[in-house]
Image (cartoon, rainbow, N blue to C red):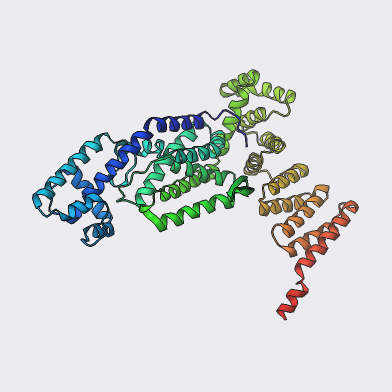
Amino acid sequence: MSARRLPIITLALIIINVGAFLFTHDTIEKQGSELGEVKMHILMLAAKHPDLTMPEDAQQFVNTFHEHNEKVWAYLQDGNRKVIDAWDAHMRVVDEPSAEQDEMDTLTSQYSQMAKIALTERYAFIPAERKPITYVTANFLHVGWLHLIGNMWFLWLAGFILEDAWGRTIYTIIYFVAGAAALQFHFWMNPGSITATLGASGAVAALMGAFLVRFPTLKIEMAWLLSFRLIRFKAAAYWLLPMWLASEVFSGALFGQYSGVAHWAHVGGFAFGAAVSLLLKATGIEHKLDQAVESKVSLSADKELLEIGDTLQSNIGEALPKLREYVKAHPDSIDAYLLLQQAYSRQGDTPAYQETVLKLCGLHLKARDTDAALQDYEDFAKSGGKEIPATLWLDLARAIETKEEFELAVQEYGKLAAAHPTARQSLLAQINAARVCLAKLGRAQEALNLYEAAAKSPVPHLDFDQTIEKGKREAMQALSPSPEAAATHA
């Protein structure tokens, strides 16, 4: 895939994440192990000796953990449980309340001092100790190189094309909100967790969810290293990404807060991104954002069109004649037709608007931008348009079929055949629809009906008779059970 502009925001996010990792990785690793040990010892001591006193911050930490982790708390209280470490073994032989209180004072003092300076305590997201700032900062911290590289790789794969589709401002807003939403979902599923959650994976998962909605049929090239052999294959987004999501739901349900991976943050982020993309698509906002990007790209490259666009905002009567002249000189300029579409829409000139939209549809198909062409088709229908030229309709239906949206392709082939029964494109539409029904949708009877309709078409079809007859035979074979199946049934 390619973008129309340099993905500045996506590159900036990657640079910030890498920079933050280089500056914080060693510190987080050292502080995390030390503070984690102190926290665990406080919990173990408090569970075994609930009468010990603690400062307010440590007491709140213990109370929150106890409230949301009853089973773990009960395990820590069990005097017959397995010894966890050397400190645990030592404290089991201490039987003086004053010594136990001294140890608790030492631990809570260490906890207070470390919590003030520990990066994870200040900037990572800890469900049991949430801070507003961590909804942002946690998305820029990572625990290791593999964690960082994996997130940045998928941020690049999904991010650069979504930034191109939505524009830099909306893309940036969605990215930050998605990261916060993913962490909030993680909190809902693990409210008492004391494990620090960090990494961009929640926000990146949101981009993956949006990518699924925006490009469901796009085939993603995969590579799998198996026994030192590299196996490469392609998989469509509509089954590959849901499969990944299902694995995250399964892992989250199975391991919950005891996993080292924030599976529920991934699930929440993915769902948020998919929902946002659906909303943008359903409301038509995505199309407007895409048009705005398209206009900026070309207007910045064409001074004359830029001047016409500026004039159009203030004086449509002056700009429109110039724009028509420009279109005559540049008949393949998508940007010029986008401006022309806006002008006719503002004027309320429906016939001219519809004509322009159909021209745009053809140009988008020529550029292999099927999504934009479908949006043009939808704009045409919303303006009251009923039928589009047979040639354009056939090209649109073929593009839809190429996207593997077979049901929609059959529908459009059918509409074309009904609207233009005497056009040669009608015959081709019937044959194509029959082929799709038989080969892709498994609807042999419908395919047979379409082939028979093509055979009776008033359009001369001597050059297609062989194709039609072959299709009829294959459809009838699909409808008839095989001898083996018949014998088994008998």
